[in-house]
Length: 331
Image (cartoon, rainbow, N blue to C red; front, side, top):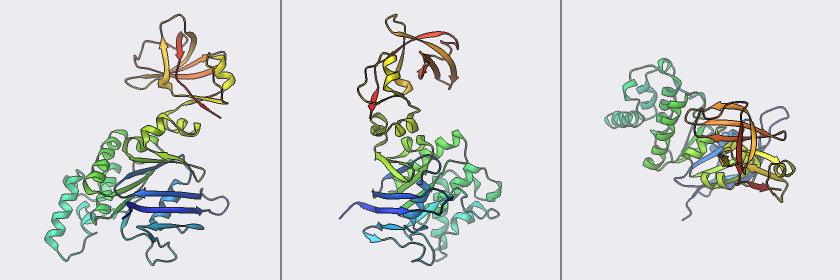
C-alpha cells in the first residue's frame, strides 16, 4: 500500500487579471505523517495551492487525489473541504464571545459527554491553554487564539492539518514555542501537516520536506538542510539564507575564479581574517543581531555581506580583511 496521502497532478489554477497569483502545472506528492512546508514570497501562489489541496478551490486543469481517490472541489461538495482534513487560517475562525473550552469542545458530538470533556481538557493541556479555559476568545492574545484554533482543528483527529501562515500574528518568542508544539503534534499524533509561510525559518525549523514556490511554480523541494546547502536556484538561496549573488565579472574582481555566469555566497561563508594575504574591504555598515553582527562590506564598488560572531570588534568606516573560499556557481 502506498504511503502517499496526497497527490497533485499537473494542477493549474488561474485567477482573473488583477487578482492574486495562481499556480501552474504543479506536480507533487505528500507522504502520510510528514511535516511539509510550502515556502515562498507573498503572491507566489502558496495559499492557492493549500486551498486546492483542501478542496476550497477547484483547479482549472489537473487533478488532486486523496489516498488515490479524486478530491472533490467546491462545485462537487455541499460544504467545501475534505472531511479528513482541517485547515487553520489566518483569521482563526473562532467564536470571539464564547469561552475557550466551548470553542474547542463544540467540535465534538454530545454522544459521550464525559469523553468529550476529557478529550477537550487533554487537548488544552497538550497546547498549554488549559488555564485559559474560562476566558472568552476576545480576551486572548493573538498567540493564545492561534493555539485555540489549532486545538479546535485537531480535536476531531483529522488525518491532515493545513496551516495558512500560522505565525503571522504572533511575536518571536511565542512563534518559537508554537513551532515546537506543532512539531510535537505532528510526531505524537501522527498527523500529516502542510504549512505555508513567507518566512523560510518556519520551513527550515519544522519541515521534513520543504517546497519552494515562485510565481505559481515549484522551484525545488527536499530536506531543508540539503536545499540550503545545495540550492538549485539563486532565488532559493536568497530566500532561505539572505545570500548575495554576484555576476562572475564582479566575483573575479574580488579574487574568485568562477566559470559560470553567477556566484552565490551566504554571509556565514565570508571569513574575516587577520592575515595580510587576504583582501581588504571597507565596512559600510554594521547591523547588530544579538549574538552576532552582519557587516555590509565593499571593495571596488562591489558589496558583500559577512557574519561577525564577535559583536563590537568592527566599526563602520574601518577596513577588514576577508577570505572568500566557499561559493556556489549558477548559469
